[in-house]
Amino acid sequence: MSQSISIDDIEVPFESGQTIMDAALAAGIYIPHLCHNPCLKPHGSCKLCSVEVNGRSVSSCTTKAEDGQEIINNSEKLNKARLTITQMLFIEGNHLCPTCEKTGHCTLQAVAYHLGMLDGHFPQFYPKREVDASHPSIMLDRDRCILCELCVRASRDMDGKNVFAISGRGTDSHLSVNSPTGKLVDSNIDKDDLAVHICPVGAILIKEHGYEIPIGCRTFDLRSIAEIDLGDVKLSEKSQHNE
Amino acid sequence: MNKIRIATTSLAGCFGCHMSFLDIDERIFELLEHIEFNRSPLTDIKHCDICDIGLVEGGLCNADNIHVLKEFRANCKVLIAVGACSINGGVPAMRNHHQLAECLAESYLNGIGVENPQIPNDVEVPLLLNKVHPIHEVVKIDYYLPGCPPPADAFMKVLGDLIEGREPSLPKTMLRYD
Image 1 (cartoon, each protein chain N blue to C red):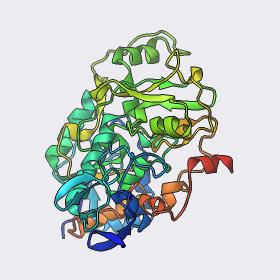
Image 2 (image 1 turned 180 degrees about the horizontal axis):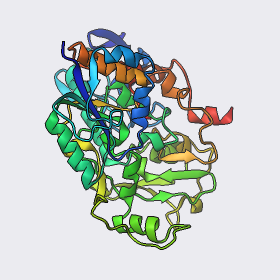
Image 3 (image 1 turned 180 degrees about the vertical axis):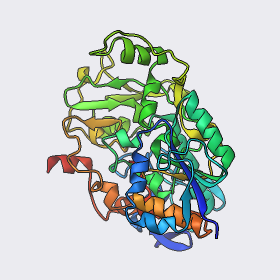
């Protein structure tokens, strides 16, 4: 028997075990998200993908689809909350887009464009965060880390290495590296690892590949995050570097 | 009909936003049918009169920046934060990672090629703030025009909307932070 949910009054079929996010993406409905990647086990930390299910607010990436659910996704109220979350992510880190190599390829930036973010609204934290440039091929700039744990999950579940973890609490939370010195150069990370290529912001970058694609011609300069996440184009950092 | 009076200034920024504004090229003549410039680097007027619109580029890195910003806020009915530096501190805010004393020492005492090293100390030189701040942390901002710099078309769109009495808005294609 076919099962379906309703997202913004559109009937969406799903298979048992799928989350609301899975069903939405398969149906071509964009739900803004940052910490979710279909390749990895959902994490539910960024809360951008919050939707209302039968009047309750839930993370769509961790909530299983159930027959008959009536879901609100693209509402003014939810998008306003998502905008506030995105503004907080910007002001809690040091996200200076004009100086960032990831600009134009950055999912955080693209989500902010999608939500119409014009300013950070809140006072800037300007936190002091450590840069790790020790590895010959990989750069770790914690200024831009949004603690989505995509690299943590990719390293653990796909690369089988456990290179990354989140340490500390609250505003002291930071990405730590599993090596005797805490430096990337002393870990067993490799530049072909998924963990290196999955960062949605410019926290983990491949060295010696700067500005190969000019600003203005980059991923989100050409297509919106909604189009890209729904599979219109596949322009991963990895494929660009291999070209 | 009275023209709409506009003031502009650059605080802790690179003047790139003003240059981008001038990229409207010959459309400035069309604009000048509706507006007049008051305090601005374009007119060299030093203090603004009562204005309809104030465009502020750059963040706050010294005491003079705060003085100018407060004068703008007091005199401009509508204040627009223009560009990354005014909105989140931008490139000048990269010094916020360091102590002010370290920055001064690096520039004026220990920098390569510095002769007769000394920290500038003159009443004419505005005192630096410990940190660079975006302008919304000091005064109320009415509208934000992001970009580094915002494209010329974005200036035209926002000013065009205001001239015609509409709530300013940017289409997604003109919204960018780099």
